[in-house]
Length: 246
Length: 261
Image 1 (tube, one colour):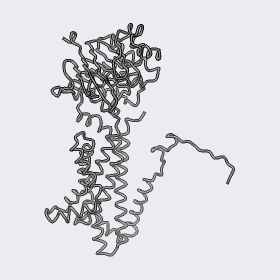
Image 2 (cartoon, helix red, strand yellow):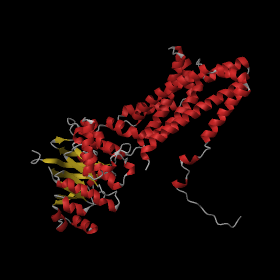
Image 3 (tube, chains in turn cyan, yellow):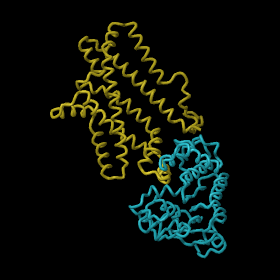
Image 4 (spheres, chains in turn blue, cyan):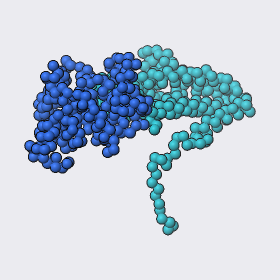
């Protein structure tokens, strides 16, 4: 069923910050196992759009359906929906008072109520996957930015989510650390995870995205395959944006 | 004036002496051991009247401890809920907590004690020690509420967002993620509140509570050793307060550990 219906349906969404229109009639569907990369100039509303998907931002009008559930309906428990949607932040946001391992096990233990042994076993596997198992007992402050971000990805994966959201995951990193984080994301994409990524990494977008979404002024200006978007952007604003960054 | 060029040294964090670099003589050690030496010398070389005074005081010290510990516990609980109330998204809870803080902060503790004991005492008879503990807790609960609020607000929003995105609800986020971190920021000012509270328990001696100060007053007024008695009382308060501040310092260091590189 998931493979037929879009797993994320965003319908005519509006969001205002005071007088500022952050999202202006945005509609977007994301299919199961699809990788969508959202790009656009800063202030274009791309992070806001991403954050509405797990209701870190509420919306003023419109509808968002995630995995068949309207997230703004009072009948649905938003915490349950969030548990199925992993999120990776620009500033990592690891729990500073917990070790790396505890960062990964906290939510599975308290929310999924699984046993400590099981949680730690899964956590160690994930840490191995993001290649940072040796730091399991370190605290976040002892890690580099790239290491922290890899742990943050593993932490989100520990809840075994159906969807992963990435909010500019490499923007706060030193250049030499961007690669290690992107590698993990590419691996994840190859495994078939449904991903929505807000990013400025055009190389990553070109390589991994099934679809590029270009936003500006709170609107989706253009969507298309990477090939289409990077080779023949239709819209004048997309062309201008590409000129500026490439 | 002199012709010497003026140089301004720009220091950064590294130039500020670290807590550990204090060496043998720290302000705490100087104060504590001086007090201890004076205390011991007085007892050894001037046994009369100091030995008599010290024998008279243990009951009072015990009462002071009882009132302090009971008030600290109660005030911490009130403070936590007040702090949570002050940041609550529920308008009414927020208003109640904020009003409580404003009112209590605006009335001197001594007046609150009098009011509870003598004014309200006309309608309800509250036992002495209970009245003391209630007044101290209500007053310090408001102060601590502000400390808790500031501590919680000092935690980066990203921590809350990360917890919410994993599927924690707001209460779980508060107790598993925010408070354990806020505790580190909160501890030093809370420690100061504890110490202030301990000293302010001396105010309850105006009720019929036989705390350390009141016992001293009783002894002094019978024996007329005012100087000697109040010297002893001051030294005992100082020693207890310094021990408490040391304890707070040790806790602080332990909780600070995960921040180290």
